[in-house]
Image 1 (tube, rainbow, N blue to C red):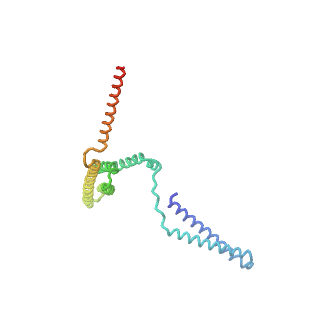
Image 2: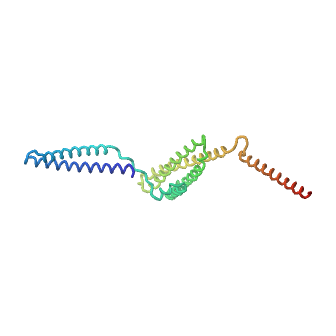
Image 3: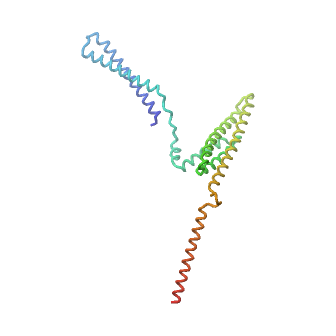
Length: 254
C-alpha cells in the first residue's frame, strides 16, 4: 500500500469516527435533557450527562485530528508499472525489450511526419551513445551527461513538432498559415539539434578511440605481451624438441 492510499484511508477513518462520536454525544445530550426534569438529577442522570460530555469531547478531538490531517497535502500518487512490464524491467534483458517496444511505438506514431527521418537518426545516435557511455571517463563523463540532457530536450521538441503538424488540418483557414510556420520552425530546430547531437556522438567515439591508444605506440601493451608470451612458448617448445632428439640419439648410440 502506497503512502497516498494510506493517507486517504486514515482520513476516512477519522471522519467516520468523528461522525459516530458526534451522533452518540448528541443522542446522550438529548436524552439527558429530556429525562432529567422528570426525576431530578440522580445517578442514572449523572451517567447520561457524563456520557454525553465524554462523547462530545471525543467528537471534538476526532474532528480536530481530521481537520489537521486534511490540511496536510496528500502524498503524490505512486508511479506504478503494469504487472508484465514491471516484471520484465527487473532484468536487464527485459528493460531492453521494453525500451525497444516503446521506441517502436513512438516511431509508429510518428510515421508520415516531417520529422520521422530525423527521429530515426536520433534513435541511431542515441543507441550509439549508449554503447559509448560506459567508456567515457574523465572529461568524457561530462559529455555523456550533456548528451542525455540534449536527447531529452530533442525528444520533447520532436513530439511538440509532431503535435503541431497533426493540428494543422484542424486549424481555421486564417490560423493555418501560422501553424504551418510554427511547425516549420520547430522541425528545422529539431533537425539542427539532431545534427548537433550526431556530431557530439561522433566526437565521443573519437574520444573513446583515442583514449584506448597508448601515447608512445599505436599498439596496445597487451599486444606486446602476446608477442612475448608467443616467443617464450616457442623457445620452450624448441628446447623440448632438442632435448627429445638428444635423448633419442643417446639411446641409439648405446
